[in-house]
Image (cartoon, chains in turn purple, red):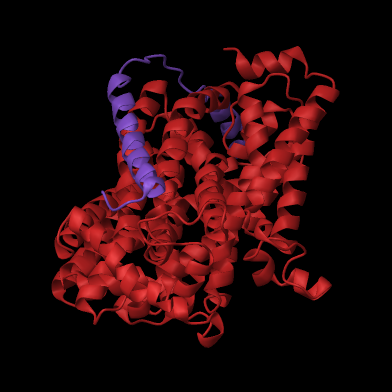
Length: 55
Length: 545
């Protein structure tokens, strides 16, 4: 990539570095945040069932 | 068309139909239909985000721009990965997901509306999406249809109809589950095609270093020689005119940045890099994907997949666009890409058909059709939820079946988008501008309210509404009366004031977002600090589990 000037070379290496950052982050935090919060859809389901009955 | 090609097409359509059917079977309630039930696999989520993000316009349009202006466009790829994936997923993804759960929000405007306890915000967001996204969708629709027409030699309107019916089928039946599953398949096809393309192009131009080194020589022999020619001697819009224009704007070579603060520098940095790169953070069809996963783990894993996917899309196509100049110079009588293909938009299709083997052109066609379909299906779904959930359900006091209302909204917005594509196919330049108009509008209208809503408890409803109104007014004014491309193409300024832009000089090259976004941020801060803080109960509901 020696033919790139400073501005384009910087963009190229920052592009590669940011992709590597994404890979590294994904690998490091692959299984680190186990907090799970399931959607509480029970009220939506009952509301929708009621509306469907009315309709 | 050979039997083999027919079989592949039938298999592709059958797989889309099957994935749409899976989506349909798994859709039991409105949460399934609008946010895919909140339990999407990270692979599906990341590929769906990426495939929605990257449309045919990004591959063909920006690839052609790279052939014209060179590797300075790699700044956009950096921004796409760092801002569009890393910042978006790591810093915005989980707060969005959690707030979406706390507030039972099904759509992006609903999330903002519930955060500030304002129906106006939800309806206003829905109206913005319903008004401007059809233009953006019709641009993608025209691009996808034109490729079908070129490859299958069929009638444009017939191709448009068939293309739309296929997408309508799985969006309508499968909801967001169907959309995301098909997106993942289409994203995979796009990824494989781009990797093969990169390898074949590097091989064709003599390797990585050799290929890029030759770019300087090709610039010297095909563009620098135009220095003695006056712009007036060249036909406007011709390849030489465009190359001469690039040198007048400060471009010095395909491997070099344009001169600092020149018209070209402002265009690449403000309009292309920041306009698109930052605008992506407030795209409703992308933000809603953060609400489709069940935990932060899925978002973390999606960062890895998303980063690789985006570099394989825009990173590769920008480099291929630039390097096509070398290939054309060596194999097409010493001409550069624009001189050979005839125009910016023609470079990538022309290059694929001329430089690549027939079998690869067929695969690449699938990649482009997949790129168009994945973006379109998400746009249709978002527009449908905007019409159904954010506007219709909020205006009336009566309760409706959300899935039914949203499906009616999807059909309505598909009809609007297809109608626009039907009438505007001869004016792609005006329609294509709608992509950047939509990005600028989304950023300046939604971004301060979205960020403030997630991270600043002191932000008030009045601050959010004032910020959205300022963002709308300033962006519209800049696009209609100042910016060198939109103001000229939209023609309102010429009609009212007899000139293409109310301002002169380099300022007209600055993107609308760069003017409107700081003003809407300042408005959000000032009005919020001047108004009464929101009720503590609302803040607890939004921020505490």
